[in-house]
Amino acid sequence: MQNFDLPIYQNPLNTRGDLRAAIEQICKPLEPFFSKGYTRLHIGNTSSGCPDPVAGMEGFSRLLWGIVPYIAGGKEYDGWEKILQGIKNGVDPTHEEYWGDIHDYDQRIVEMAVYGFALALIPEKIWEPLNEQEKKNLATWLNQINEHKSHDCNWLLFQVLVNIGLKKVGASYNQEVMEKHLNRIEDFYLSDGWYSDGVNTHCDYYTSFAIHYYCLFYAKLMEDDDPVRSHLYKKRASVFAQDFIYWFAKDGSALPYGRSLTYRFSQAAFWSAVVFAEVEPFPPGVIKGLLLNHVRWWFKQPIFNADGTLSIGYAYPNLIMAENYNAPGSPYWGLKTFLIVALKEEHPFWQAEEQPLPPLKEMSVQHAPHLVICRQEETGHILAFNSGHKGTNDHTHTSAKYEKFVYSNYFGFSVPRAEWGLGQGAFDSMLALSEGDNLYRVKRRVEEYSIEGNIIYTKWKPWNDVIIKTWLIVGAPWHVRVHHIKTKRSLNTADGGFALGKGKDNFVVEEMETIQNDGEVIAKNSLGESGIKSLYGNSTAQLIHPNANTNIMNSQTVIPTLQGKLKPGTHWLVSAVFGEPSSETSTNEWENAPRVEIINNELNVLTADRNKILFSNVMK
Image (cartoon, rainbow, N blue to C red):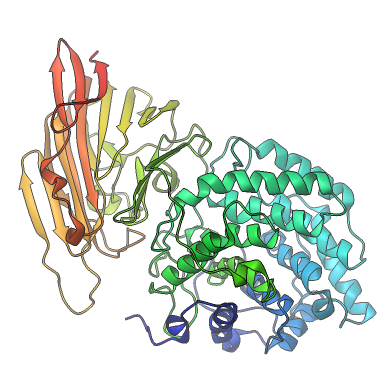
């Protein structure tokens, strides 16, 4: 049971003082978990891909993303002396809790970045109090980063931050490494302010809370040293903001998409960096409203453990959706969003009155991240329709995090619990296929794709001899999926709709209303409505009850799903998928599903009243 009596849940999060208090409320519960030498945190007994001592150092270091702006804003942080002692001990090779010599692709490379951040922002607290030997230890330990390889992605900017910090305090640093990595980041730039996280990789929150965040920090701190890059980074951030604002809803929630979602409120870190770097893509009041609403939304969710520590998960504690690199201290990376606390009280951001989001279009085509964003302002529902990607990676649950047909800020998405059947697979917003052995495959990468207005086309191959062409007709509350399947195998198909939570009251089992016929099924409760209809193809409809804790928003869900069987040959399947956030605001659109007509071997998808053709294709 979540302890909503924690101080963080009582914080109104209206003022600069409230956000300072929030940093304390997030960090103070960790004091009992420091190691003897204050160099590490042991918050929990789960592990990540790095050694446990390194994970402990990660947890310690990530607190600084909040504490450093807290101090930079002009206030003493109670407990800083212990943290500073931990830093001294951690970089001292003679101390028993020395953080150690690093190696190529080391997790400690990630964590070193915050020490460059701190040296640049609060040298009087982290550098000047050190004696000569302690300064030498810190600079020597940090300079290791210039001798080792980083992953060819946002990691390259960790070296940049470390060198900025060393430069600002007059310590030895490596300008050549900075130049090399900043030049390489240019290869990640796409268009419209978007970076991919590496060459031919995904665009997700790493564009915002990593690459833009660090580049904006560079733009502010290195404005005099490198005015050309600083101007470029600010300009790109301003352009990116015009797309990225579509990822945020009026209630403060953001679109859950991609990996590293356990960093939670870091989803808004970009907006803090924008204000810090004095970029103004929107009036200060708009950004203030967006940021504070976002943090408020998060601190209404059961994301804290009973002792006040952050859990791993998204809208509730959940290890199933986590990455292999998520250690117990990893979620504290979200403190990057508190960079705005470094701004003085008289800053225009703090003086501005909160404003709502500006008027936004119902649909935003965002080619760089391969998404079409659809917004329902009356319900606050954001849907991101996705073409998929030609590249893939080895991260956990890549198909679930990057290849579903649509992502929702309200229904979230689900990840597999195990490999057996539809219940363990939790295939919401996906077409899953098996050879009758109850082992299902889904789209992991695409062969080709295109986005033309509200039509997304994707070609993908779950097996080499199974070719699927999918067209998504974007819309809300209805969208349509057209699948053309050419197979040399006998297949079972399962086309899943949105995952609807079963309820949020821990003491009352909520009844769920369902309407089910051969080719359609809808589930309704106080959380909303989710349904699916077969418009063409021999499919039957049923509610799948996936394993618990597969969905990132709700621990128990149902998934309306169309199931069918295909023999070798060519087949067409057309489904209409329905989702609305709340039955109280339902517009009774369930009866107004799109329709399909086939005339002269041409498949047409039409509006419910048949007055408009939404999609047309010759059947082959």
